[in-house]
Image 1 (cartoon, rainbow, N blue to C red):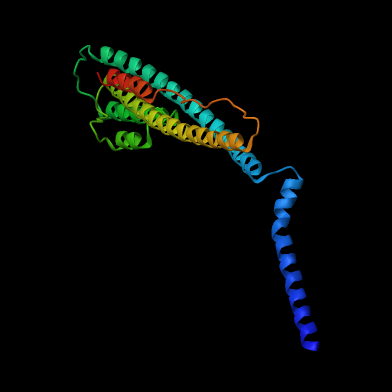
Image 2: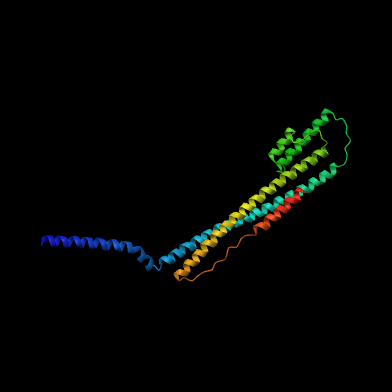
Length: 234
């Protein structure tokens, strides 16, 4: 009798433990359903939230791309002004200059004037540090003995070269910003498509948010840049 009662007690304890474990495993599902959140709907809400977060990132990427576009336009305007100034200097330098023997004082004045103007241009960010070093070291064709008109033409040409380099750098940044914006937009479209699919399976009302379209045809924008570059090099 004692053995039978002991065996029954053991089985009763095991059954109670099994029931408790089953209740613990089923508790989250009952809680979610009691709150009106079936698993499919909960997943749909999570995907929709991820899509909205991705949309916020995509808006920031598109704003970055818009700023990069403004930088490209400003860099081109600066280069265009430098190009026109350089062309005028070349026209002025075309007139012949009488060759005369110069004193050491006059040559020293020309050298100081060249260094002063080149340093001022560098401070205005019209010349790079590397270009200024070339001027001060009299390398790369920089001869302080030349006539001030010829020096002015050379300085204007150097400014044009620097401005064009800045324009190309701005173009590269704009292209990278556009690529980042496109990748972010593709992420948004993918997450929103997944959210719509899950909502449809869960029987929810399908919401159609604003579609994220490509920011611009890449080839058309690059063609504009190449046309500008060809015009600058001609």
